[in-house]
Image 1 (cartoon, rainbow, N blue to C red):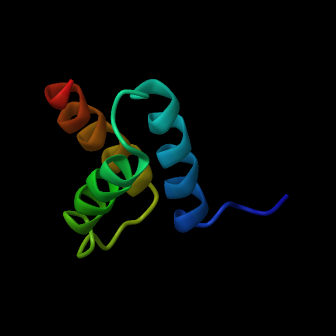
Image 2: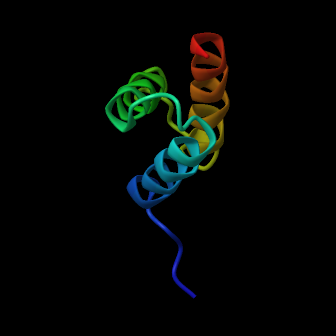
Length: 65
């Protein structure tokens, strides 16, 4: 079984958030996920980055709705 790449996981997060926050544009959601991801670009341990990105993006998007 192959492990999903960080980019694949981030793509899944974006799709999930587009479904949840349908009132926001997909571009806005993608930008929010991208900004959250940038906050962790220096993190040496990458295993939890997608989870942390999703949490931060959800908080940001929830504040916009």
